[in-house]
Length: 108
Image (tube, rainbow, N blue to C red; front, side):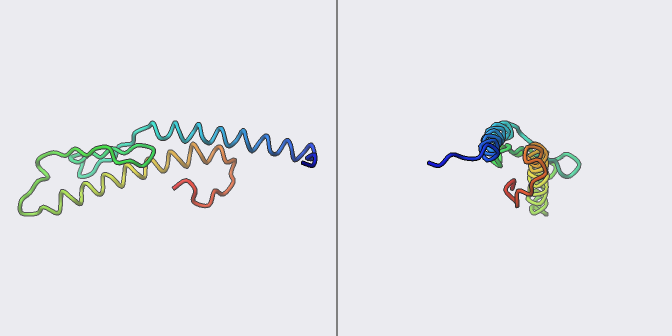
């Protein structure tokens, strides 16, 4: 294997360090939970930083037999809010590691 120029070797070391930091940040993100609410708090959804949907809780008042779609709409809104919070955290924590490099949608 030919010897790498010193600058190239340094660049490879920086890339390895950045990759390790990125993995550590992704693991930390996956361990977090994010909450979203809808309907003034009558529906609460929780997702993990890995994107896994964990739970949903809702007040019985949203269970209207004459309008069953409202409960579904509120659950969707709460889950979407929780996912948006998770994405914002990912972009903040992982984006800082990228040093302003455009990751081309790699963060979700």
